[in-house]
Amino acid sequence: MESPSGAVHLQPQHQVSVRVKTYVLDTNVLLHDPQSIFKFEDNNLAIPVEVLEELDAIKSEQSTERGRNARRVHRILQELLPDSRSMHEGVKLPSGGTLSVIINRYLVENNWSSPAMQRLRATLADFTKKDNRIIASALFVQETYPPPTILVTKDVNVQLKARAVGLEAQDYLNDKVPEAPETDSYPTLTLDVYEMQRFCSEGEFELPADAADRLYLNEYVLLMTPEGKTMPGRYFGRNTVRRLRLPEFVKAPGGIPIRARNLEQQFFMDALLDESISLITCFGKAGTGKTLLSTACALYQTCNDNSCYDGLSISRPVIALGKDIGFLPGSLEEKMKPWLQPYHDALEVLMPSKPPKELQFANKKTGKKKKKHDDSPSAGSSSYHGGNGNGGGLPPMKPYERLIKNGIVEIEALCFIRGRSIARRFFILDEAQQLTPHEVKTVITRISESSKLVLIGDPAQIDNPYVDSRSNGLVYCHNRMKGHSLAAHVMLSKGERSRLAELAADLL
Image 1 (tube, helix red, strand yellow):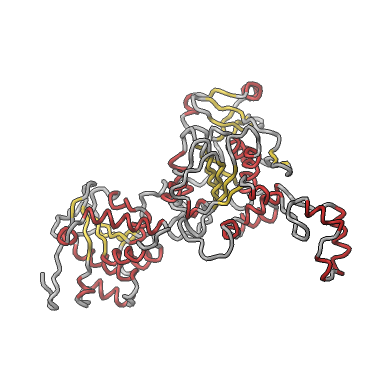
Image 2: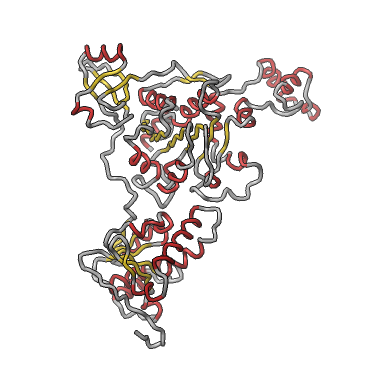
């Protein structure tokens, strides 16, 4: 068809059934999951040409996950849409639906006769914004194809604006876990007094088949008597629950002993100390001990002569996986330190560095009367500083800093993890709820034999605008991996940092 301006616009020729939906995909959906094109079953997909423009601007990001995904989408579209006619008329997808690229004729011809476009122009008049142009393209599809038309976007604000102009919009649901009733409790199994005594003495208990069917492998349970006595256990499959076997405490070299303060922390320690478990997911609010316990158990094992781990690796997302650390000065450890300060705090607690008492008293006596020449090391303090290998005058090296210097503790940047093979390491990934499922998959597939990966975070505290409590990588990983012999999951709900921190976490 030829417009008054002379431009030629091809009308989609493929058949659209009224029994299926037409989904218009936003850019962030394709960046989130390049394979999303094949995950809408027999429905019809429409990609606005503005999406291709946004992908083109992102594809040059060489070292980021977004750039890689943009290039993957380009390759997929190039294979599916090899020429102009197939792009406009649409092609059949292996899933049974169709795919086409949409050019909004109303914007090209500056034609506002459509009621939908008039409504859009009255509410979202700035069409220099790509989001508004994508919404306009979705409205064009809504008028061109039989209903229903749905805009799929992971941007909550775009969803709201689309609904405001009469367009149905929803999140990308393929990688969302099913909704489940919120609960912070563990399964409870009721035993009589004699069964509990046998469980405590023999260390295991055989469950009835109907009770075992409700549990998954490596799930933690509470065994309870009618009188209220409880005992923690773990389901090992084959209808068997076994008692936890934990050391009295764990301790880093030269550090202080750390003990579990509640049953949930006992579950966490059991999973952390079990070398047969390669993946742990842990949910917990602030102050429940996620960071401290995981670090303590990691150092307890890595510094053991019989351990299968050569060291501890620590990381967390820097805003999001794949983001460049930037042009901060210093080494990788110095760049990552602001993001990993909670682990420096935990290491300081586990391995405190206190100078000798006589040096403390000397500092107190002379603290208010320091002179410039006092900066030089005195005879009494040179041996203390020199004993740390730093030379006179330099502050003493903290115990955990020696572990970092010797490579026992490593700071990992997630943007450099692709292509690596992490062997014989105890890997802790904090704030995992900020990652997408694809990003968590990228990390897990880097873990080699004899390594352990611990994903910890709070699904209720998410700053990433493109994931939520049901679609973030931590929750998604737990949902897909539970029941496998290599994986375990723990929930921590009781705060142990302080009474004030617990009160704030619950009320504020």
